[in-house]
Length: 151
Image 1 (cartoon, helix red, strand yellow):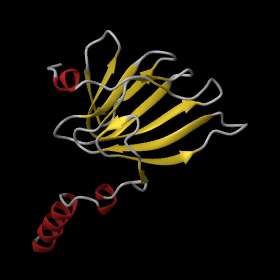
Image 2 (cartoon, rainbow, N blue to C red):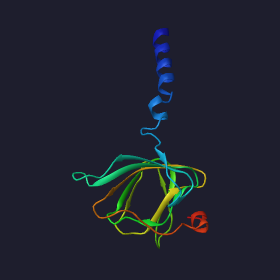
Image 3 (cartoon, rainbow, N blue to C red):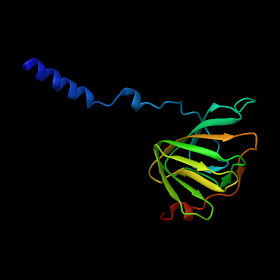
Image 4 (spheres, one colour):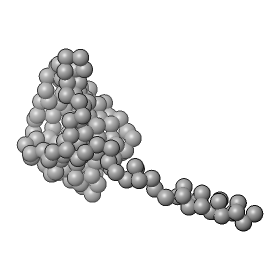
């Protein structure tokens, strides 16, 4: 009986410990991106460059709290898979949305939008875009007023 109780206590204690693999990022942080088309610190790591067979590129983007991209569009669209943190996504003419870990955002082709972290939380996502229709079209900065506005 004592042995069974000891095993049960040990099992509960073991199951309540966080797994080491969950504490470390899956992909490296990548290179800090120069602040040309964004505000704040953003790191990019290309997972897959587009080529003649797989015509879409895939990258990981890590945003510090407060970091955000400028308004832009993708001729072929883009899919964002939020893997960590909390962020914002907004399409032109629509309200700003909060996005969280586990959510998928579909940026339709040619639709002007921006995305980034919230002021107090960073966000990480995997982004994929078809390259054969053209590169990202960068527009203008997201104003501080728009970024800080209530959802």
